Length: 340
Image (tube, rainbow, N blue to C red; front, top):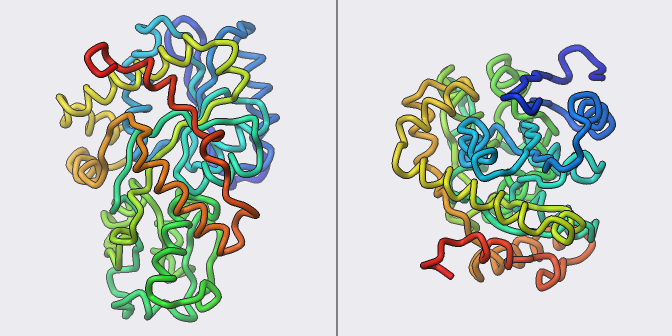
């Protein structure tokens, strides 16, 4: 299933008596067909909602909802699949292996600009400083401009990459001024420590994992007019055919966000177990995020601005029609009665 030793990481864990699966996969190529085989072999039921999400601190609500069994308690059968990047979640959607997927704004914009089978139904978190540019502790580089001619690792097509392009533009640097290497987040701390790259840009927990090994922060992607919302995308056929399941899905995530707010230490312990961070480091990384289900006009306008920038960089051919790409009614239905 996974070719190339060391190129992908796979952990399959059965959860509960429904045969649900958590799959952690690094890398994208071949993921769709591989996942489809796992789905079919694990559970013949087709009434489940197949959920692709990330093992990033920004996706805390997703991890809490899965680990806490909140979807099952909402009467929803979920097959959860955990990845280490937004593009991997997008690939699961593209291939038909997932019904719902989470990803940062850049990945979401690329997805809806290329395929009208998907719609943005919510944001479950954001954080202006959740993406960080890291260098070794002994690096001579003291400013972003000092990266000229140096090698920087980043996962292309992610919101981190979009934020890094914004940062370079703000510093009047062309991307060609540095050597950008497309790299999985899980590989970045080791590559930095080994000296094969001079810096990397990633979202939590990768920067904190590197910091635990002596790396230091050079900059965040904050202050650039983007709060980097983490979006939830769904297949339009799921939205048409299983409206109530989508609403229950969002209600389970809302409950998870309440848990994060009322029990931050317990949440940090859960995230630490999943990400490999120390609990206190996980809690510190959580502080860089705001966890709230939303899809308001500010988020949509942020998506439009980011899309216009990505078009100017040649990342997308055209700005999506967000009046069509965004479907907020499911989140409205999932709101508590007092908020409707």
